Amino acid sequence: MSATLDRLKELGFTLPPAAAPVANYVGFQRSGNLVIISGQLPFGADGQIDPAHKGKVGAAVSPEAAAEAARHCALNILAQLRAAAGNLDDAVVSCLRLGGFINAAPGFSAVAGVMNGASDLMVQVLGERGRHARSTIGVAELPLDAVVEVEGLFEVR
Image 1 (cartoon, one colour):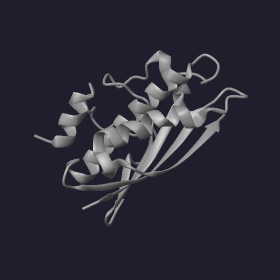
Image 2 (cartoon, rainbow, N blue to C red):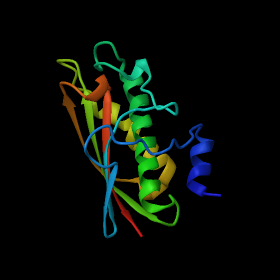
Image 3 (cartoon, rainbow, N blue to C red):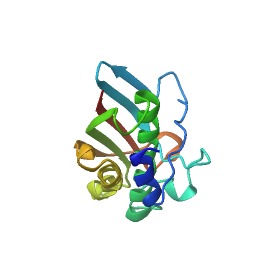
């Protein structure tokens, strides 16, 4: 059994299957020992976005619900990473970077707190291998009206 999957289970999460792209792109691209993960939306285990994870944070969506959506994005990143690397234990060296896009209402500037949902989960699951550089920006719109989208860059063996 995978120690990383066990850790996810301890935290109350199940790794979903890697989401299929919804347009003309791939879910991940591997080049040597780097894996670039395309932006992941907060799809749940059923492949749908929870209505609580749609809209603009600071308006219809609370910062807490947006941080939860960011955790779902991180789970989907890990699913893509497993598809790219084969496993999340021996193959994953480090999460190098996460980039977060937050569907923010005008005037909402606490986007870093929303992105902490993804960052915190990555460290909880991968430990020191999950510590990363990060960018977080507020945007006017996201695909499917998602409140958050997160992309990642990983070093693998």
